[in-house]
Amino acid sequence: MGKLGRFACIFTPMALSIASLLCLLLVFLGGLNKNDSNLSSLWFFRADASDFLANPDFDLISGTDIDDHILQAFRTSASSNKLKDFYTVHLWNYCSGDIKGDDFKLTYCSPRQASFWFNPEEVWGLNNTAAERFFPKQLDKGLDVYRKVSKWMFAAYSIAFWVTVAEIVLGIFAIFSRWGSFVTTIASTASTIMTLAASATSTALYGSLTGAFNTVLKPYHIKGELGHKMMVVTWLAVAFSFGAGLFWLISTCCCSGKSDKKRVKVEKTPYTYERVASPYLGHREQHGGSHEMHNMGPQQTGKVSAYEPFRHT
Image 1 (cartoon, rainbow, N blue to C red):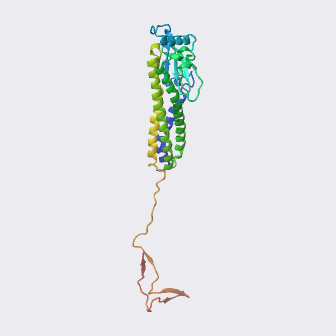
Image 2 (cartoon, rainbow, N blue to C red; image 1 turned 90 degrees about the vertical axis):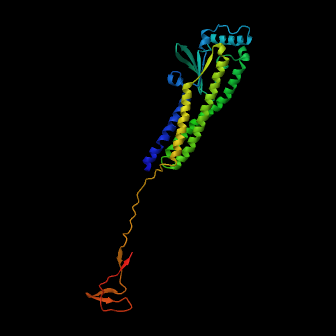
Image 3 (cartoon, rainbow, N blue to C red; image 1 turned 90 degrees about the horizontal axis):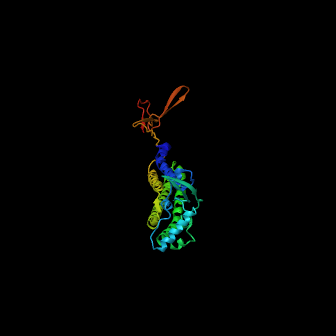
């Protein structure tokens, strides 16, 4: 098959590995630039407070001091412009903006930091207020779990990204041998495991956070939403990585890359003969143009036989 066939054999897993890397890159680039509508649309979670801001003076439940404290804190945050229409949470940071009709316009993105987690009490200016003491315990517990797990999630995405880069680099060496494919398969397996772990963690984490927001903050007209586009991108990364690992494994068994050279084996034609000296006729010597026979056998004959012996080979 040769090197060309070997290259064709690893083209599919290499393309799938690159596709997985691009999906992971999109996860990292989400929220990078508030002016880029494509990247800003890639978020894990969105909190929508536009309904509250549209009517911040609504009466919640009469005779409930705890709810009134939280409601008053939200009103204070809204009056000081700390509470925006919506917030989107990304891997590195969060962004906020205004809603005009059906248009979600980003106006601010926080600085990017590793192991980021979205703390609504701090972002909305509710810390060091009465609302912080009375904030629903269910949401507090959810945020505490979110803070701890978000560190693991960020580490899993980072490891998955760099292991996928290593997989692609090793895949170049896989062009030359099946041993290269074997080493690349190991890297691909690690990449798939980490990508799967990161995607499963982010899905469960932000799914739980969405549920907590919609349960606890629903009376305040604040709702949460899971980022479906980001979920599609991160699970596509898993699918591409799994497919790449499968084809890398297949390439360890097929397409050796060695040319199939036909070896022409020359054999002697059967039943050939070689002429040998006769033990009966002896050999001839020339002396002055005359021929003299010397008998090599035990008896001498004065005649030259017409028979010429041959040796079978």
